[in-house]
Image (cartoon, rainbow, N blue to C red; front, side, top):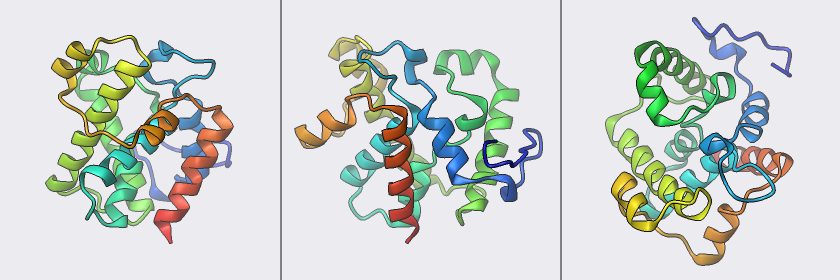
Length: 187
């Protein structure tokens, strides 16, 4: 990692996880395999911020600790990359096992439980599906009916907020905003 840490993918230690490495990697990782509109990629960091924002909107009583978990839901991708869901399904167990071990190490590093409680997992999945719908229809060329069939009806944000979060940012902006939100949730 750029921090100098060496992360063992098969046995990751929470001590080798740094938020700067996560933010850097996720800000340069393209969602939708880069098949999105705009001059910049739509990064996993920007997606994570959108998902956290949607979770706050749909579940206004969610506490900061769980919002942190939502923000970090795709954090393992800073090491293993973002693969489209159909391909993850083909690869199957080995990929998911590595991803789960990384998420456990990341969770422990930032004071979250190793295993997330089911209500939190449901919040993450609901917000992630809403984000996927919005990204699909605004950035990846999906028709509304097609995205609704795949992802369901999304939670909506204020139009100005939605426009901001769905306009691809530069890697530097995505990294900066991700780190700023992490700091807000850490305080």
